[in-house]
Image (tube, rainbow, N blue to C red; front, side, top):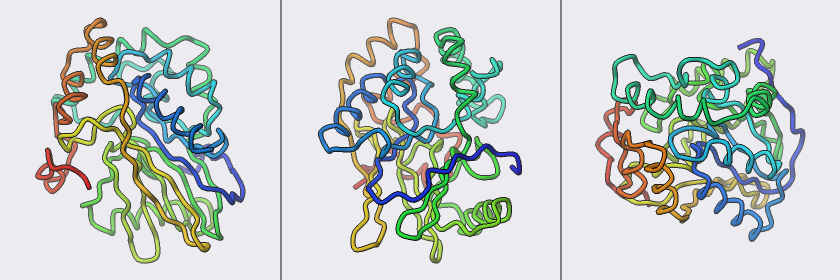
Length: 281
């Protein structure tokens, strides 16, 4: 953790578009880029929390879209694994679980699809971002401060989140007010005392709530107060599914795009498991 590569964006005085978990879903990523342009978000106002590559059928094309777009981006565990040509995605799945088994289907395809130039770019990305908005100190991480592949969910104890804040504060010798993270795939904003932990949800896969929409968020500044607003996004699902079928990516995630339900809930706490199929408002 002490050697974490952090890039400082400095002080920002504009809204931010936040997304992550593109998961090789080119159509969804392209739809978000279109939304950003239509809503006047410049590339420097957009932050990607990593995992550009994963389940869907366009790893190479999705990475190139993100690179050409020029948004701020950090390493996810998948980028780290692909950069060093590891044998697995580094997602933090326990060996032998359904998630672990499914990853052995899509990861080799992704590993074969990305170029060496893209691997080099992954290795150059920072692990964390830091920035200040309205005197609030913000850190952008992938999973958590302690581990790039740690899953953090809204139902977890406040102490889990406070431990992560404490780790950031100790290692950077400065107090952190807000953490923006990815990895876990579900959108939430959790208030812990005077601190906030925010996850925009995944751009490349539905949120296990029985709907087909994918997710991103916007950090707005209203009267010097920071507010996170979660957004649903529609995109060309059929094209995405067809590309997955063409490339034999049939481990179950292709069905998730249309059913809105995950093929496995191994990583979820009990409360989030009980929420499967219930539409997020």
